[in-house]
Length: 158
Image 1 (cartoon, one colour):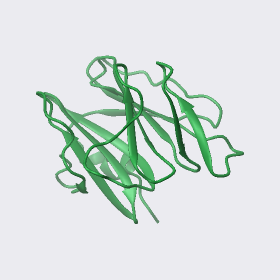
Image 2 (tube, helix red, strand yellow):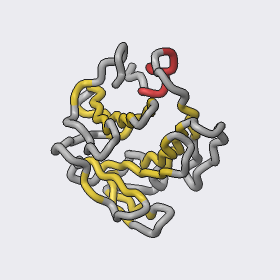
Image 3 (cartoon, one colour):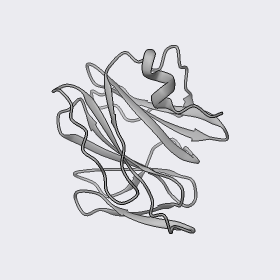
Image 4 (tube, one colour):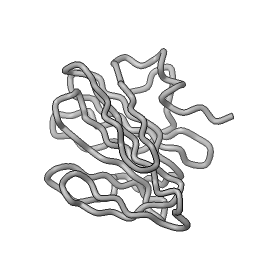
């Protein structure tokens, strides 16, 4: 049975992540203390057959694979919102306030988004499933970009 990142890492993460769930229709709101990274999951419509469209809070519209979700992450609880999703060609896309949907760096391909983790001072990690394996990319902040995709090490997540 495939374990999700949220359940697997619950005991090994070095920071707090409050995970929100959503119905098939609308997202729920997750409450968190200042400094907590929160994740809300947006699900495709139940009638999805090949692709579905999702529009983020800034009006950026993207097209995604059916049966895949969109992650909406509020990094460090500071209103730094970023979305992640899987396109029909399996590329990994993200959007934030000052951009539209753009492909993640380093040519990653995935079957589904899984989770995110943040650790002070600025480390942000995103995880996806591909070929039955969990893959991660980390942005260490300070002007750096997302690092190459690598198999996640659940004992040392970042």
